[in-house]
Length: 239
Image 1 (cartoon, helix red, strand yellow):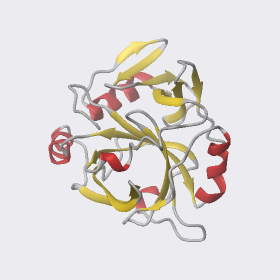
Image 2: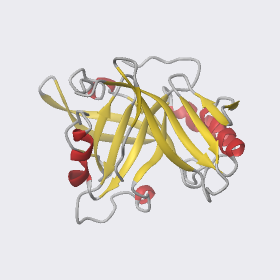
Image 3: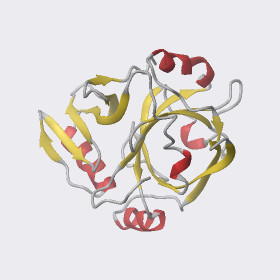
């Protein structure tokens, strides 16, 4: 079960697989991750999840041979490409982002089938998406889970490799401070200088933006996970 806290929480990271979800899923299974079954959203996209404690990694795409299902992901490149923050009140988040000067779409309902206690049910979400992304190169939005029990089920969180939680997300940008401050404004937190770059401190992890003069646009680079034994390692997207 999810619980609201004072500081914005991270919800999930998106690894874009475009029309190759079926072909690329085994790459993640070979790393020792237990993936959820493939599900199709009401908007036409499809996914499989790596479910962790309080967060998850979404492998997102659309059916092979079909056109991209959703306009906002049609041009998304392969690999780690989106950050999704959590909200417990989608309408309030929509109003906050509008007041901060962002171009935001009205709250949207997203659904997909899910298995719960052996029965097929509808997993339901409210999303707050941007009409214009706050940063080039990094897609982001907010998600409210109306049925969190459909995501965080114990069987989906039992990974053979012992993966437990998402610890850190790294990004690179020519203007690390500016990008971190923009991310922080979206999340409603304050960026902090750290380790030669800038951190965006969230309730359950931190996003670290490293200075990289060769990054034409900001880019998400790595996800760092923690095992049950406390070891840290980087997710290999293989893309």
